[in-house]
Image (tube, rainbow, N blue to C red):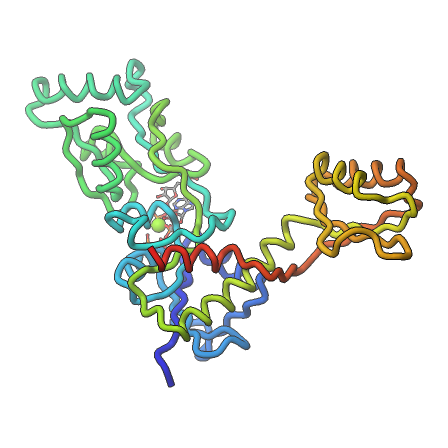
Length: 325
Ligand SMILES: Nc1ncnc2c1ncn2[C@@H]1O[C@H](COP(=O)(O)OP(=O)(O)OP(=O)(O)O)[C@@H](O)[C@H]1O
Ligand SMILES: O=P(O)(O)OC[C@H]1O[C@H](OP(=O)(O)OP(=O)(O)O)[C@H](O)[C@@H]1O
Ligand SMILES: [Mg+2]
């Protein structure tokens, strides 16, 4: 048997549940042969695939190394742990969950410090007053260095923090922090505030491909099949299917519907008996239904779509273009 195609899926933490349901929605049923504690799995009906259950940060490291082909992980981890990330990996698609910002946060008591420029002023004076440089607690060492350098802040020292970073200023081990936040509740609870221009990265969970994995013909074919499932689901969730029948439908009407409501006609114009199938963005359904009735439709029905299989597979096309570079 040839070497398996490896897909890395978060095994714990913030992304786990959403990642598993993302694959399930795409019709890819993940199963763990050895039960819940097994860290290897398969996808029903797709041969020669191995699911590797890893933590989100291990997934980023494995993508960098090329020991997994595809993985789901946070953009924050990709950008922090992979130098020159855009060359080593492809973020095929944002998955619409795991939203979080990497931010610079300082004590709320620092009332005069609102921006990175203010922070630069504090940093310069800090060493003279305290005999050491201003300390920034974070696990995002590379992101912090890059962001501070872009803002011309140089007089600081990073204190590496693996957890409970928000507690560092109160504990006296750092003056400020760089960390990830979603609701901001942890920052507030620790008396910290985000600088006005202190959002370093807006992150979400991504489907990521590794350049350095083994992309043999067989592996590419497996990727095509997996991405075909995901693209079909993505296309389906962007639209609802609208069906109607009316005699007066013509090209001008269809193009007006396209321009006004973002509607597409996947099977072409009306059939000889006047039946018409349209795909319409969910937010425009009522407007489209009214428009069709104003122009003579008697009845308009709307249903949800599970999958839309297209000849084009934009996700696989993106992967092929990346591997060709
Ligand atoms: N509020 C949040 N706080 C932290 N991470 C979040 C949040 N919302 C989404 N994420 C995303 O989830 C990713 C994984 O974070 P999480 O703390 O759940 O991982 P973990 O399983 O604890 O891994 P590790 O043991 O490596 O920290 C983050 O890097 C980020 O991309
Ligand atoms: O802005 P909020 O919604 O308050 O979320 C932010 C907090 O959540 C994360 O920790 P997590 O719960 O993942 O614990 P961990 O540090 O042990 O991974 C993160 O490190 C922050 O501490
Ligand atoms: Mg964590």
